[in-house]
Image 1 (cartoon, rainbow, N blue to C red):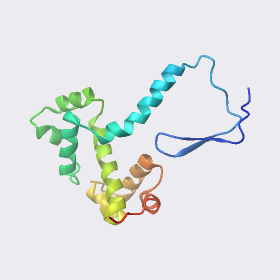
Image 2: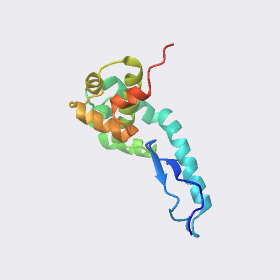
Image 3: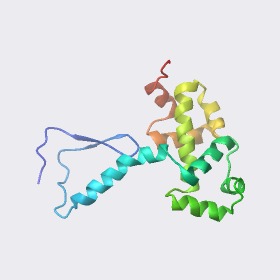
Image 4: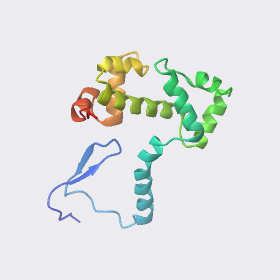
Length: 162
């Protein structure tokens, strides 16, 4: 069956980039479960809010990470702060639905966004503040988070004066 919509359909991917599906794309499967689709879409909508509002143990670990940047803390160092074994740290984070690496990436992403928009610092200095040794590593990570490089992101999101 061919879609009769007038032109391409535009959708947003998880990273915020636009994806286009041509009008020649396949129709939904007759076995598609609309309830499962609705649940998946609801979880996708909740994800940004959950990431911003980390509480509990993950929130405390996030605070430690923010305090220890740019030293690039590893899980052993972070676990030592509340006198935990590294394995316990990882298990407690997993119980809250996140890994140490994902939490560190989340912290870096949020701080990078803030620094690019509000601080007016050079990209190299932001990379060092976030614990990156190479600017190219930071740029690559930022591109994975936002779909564009840090300089392009800054152009698209000019600082607002208060």
